[in-house]
Image 1 (cartoon, rainbow, N blue to C red):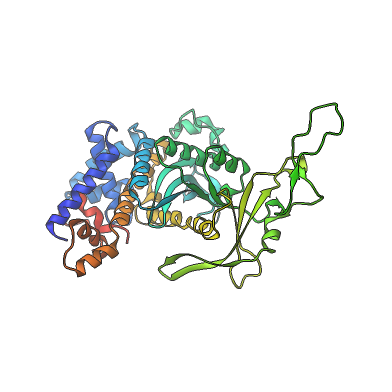
Image 2: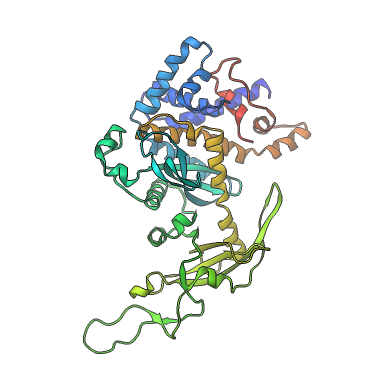
Length: 450
């Protein structure tokens, strides 16, 4: 990259940091926030405060002063991480091309001991087992060409929320009470919508999709969804018709709950999907070629609590996947998208959730989301917000200036300054933090995720 390119990139990251941090306290704090984001972007095995401090200075005698500055900013200072997430949400919703979905999920952080906020022996899908860990719910914006985290909330088990002394020791506000992860997801969605983010389709795994109250809350907010669900949910057969039965007498309140007009019983999603004709659908071109499988979709009504007299649920799509060679369908989704929605569109949304797995891989593997060593509520959320900011910087650049475009421009020998910047992360390896001015923000893109 030319010197002009480095200067241009330095200005870009500086402007990004200024946009994210403006108004969040005195200039010293905002400078430390920018240094922390830069440290997260720099190459290095560990992205906790002390190693970051060591990479940001040239003289070892300055490490302790930098560590204290970062510690004060991330762990002690009282700035609102929700403001950072709201600005990231606005930026990514505006700048990422073809954003079509919100994605909700949770992720685990293995921890030792019992003093780190929220740590408990609990099941983590990330770890695939019950272990000592923290779990956080996150919200992401996603499209085929990019995605980024726009909200994260630490989950507190009841063993924490019922022990106020333990919560206060970890800096948990007294207003925080127990809430399941799906309620955290709704709260994050509400914050994003309040920030002006457009209403996108909500995607999530079965831990969210199986919760009737979550699906109903999305519908109440005017949000469509495509959610994984377990195979044992029950629905009324697709050809079932419903009507409100006539009253038995003139005494009492008239009946209002629709019932099947002919004798029939609900069936599981697995049983129904096994009777459907599945056909091949290609949803995207990946690095390994076409991504395709066999799918079927049918309109159904859920039979939730039918044994207790509840009426049928609203009509939704059941989408099932039956890969060739499998004995039965393997994945099931419910979707509130309109009845006119094509099978390919349903499949595309169902499969778009892969973006969040990539986000987690990058946030943890490259940017140190799971490296935080502090124990407090504020420290965890400040670190998460600044990791999300570093990731948003990379995601936005990668989507707006894809490496493929830069390589084409380079072959034509007429690179624009923007394409030249985009070419750097695809061709430069990570710069060692031992050379030159370590605090320079231009070093950050040397470790842009390829």
